[in-house]
Length: 504
Image (cartoon, rainbow, N blue to C red; front, side, top):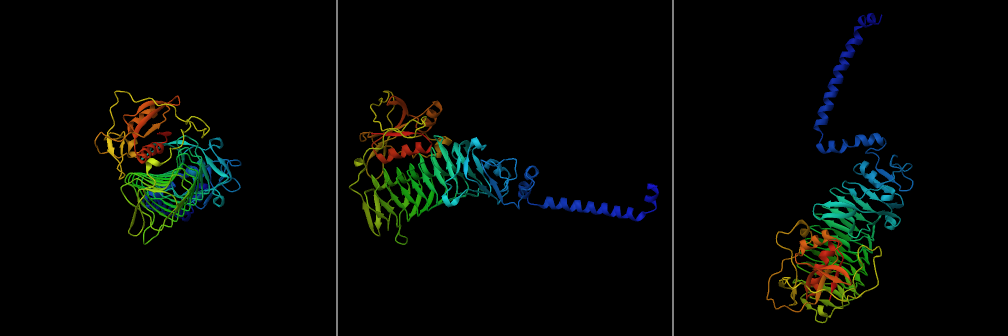
């Protein structure tokens, strides 16, 4: 009967053939359309298939993903009523253009985070920008291999097309820990708190151009902001307080530094290498050493006739401005209340060389820092008692010409053809002068905890040797009669995460 119905009704059979051909045509058109799509669109959509199965409501129309470390669950959908638990999971499933909204709480390994957190596409990670992330805390550390800075320990990596980091607190307690590591990217880092990072709050590396605005850098042991390579950050309306070196610029970095407050740091701003900085409307106060220090071949613009600087330097304990370069610092419209050192031009046609604040008159540096394997970051001051003399067979280091002050120095230099590690922190090769140099005044010591760290130091300073201070083993890497050059060597090691001591 079914067969009879089929043979006596040819019209539906004809329609089915037409439908089949139509389906084939549509299928071919779809295939052609897919092939014609740009490859980046295919790459962006393909990985989300499995993710959308697990999170069927998450698609490019869902622009906000909610995360809560206490009440969230990574098996949920990331909605406001069903948040995820970890930023790690949110970063995996978040489409380009979305916002990861963080609830108050601490995000750490204990709550399931896997560090470092990697932000490499146009996504916003946001906590509470109104209070600079006071109760939205990301705390952790993980090993990251940087193309420009070798292995690093970091909490957040901002790479490639990284979007924005807004309204969070970032802490990395590792002795060499970086809070946010920016690698050849240009994210917006706005309204955050960077605190208690073992090395640096924000490190900017490679060829990066981030906006760093209205952040609070507090109590970071090495640097608040460290800028490497050829990076050119905009640094606007931040506060750097009690945080080692507020801003460090090295290599060929260039920064525009505007409307910031530097209060109670060791040094407010320090420049080395061939780095450059333009400062406008900043206040640099209460530094334990200098408000601003420029060494090597760096350049600083503190104000010009066409654009007065309107910076204020006051109550810095040793120097307001220290220029240890051969380049004059132009500081038209900048107010300086304390002593300065070096060649500084405060007015048009006026060239000032400070005479009342020579480096030899500076008070000694702070006491020996605590061992890095102790939890407590500070210890009562201790005074060095003795230092083991150099081995008799140690070759004398080559004396070199220092800056325009006429002083000479002794420094251990890295060999030619240096390793990738030495490329991170360049050490200028010194020209040779007569061996009748001035007496050594400053010795730079570095703490090493194992043979690997000792090898790393010797890759930069091949003739570094072991010495004993306060019953502990250190490496002496250099002997100097110029304080600025001694500080440069010390800062090179601090930037690599080592604990150092400058011995007079």
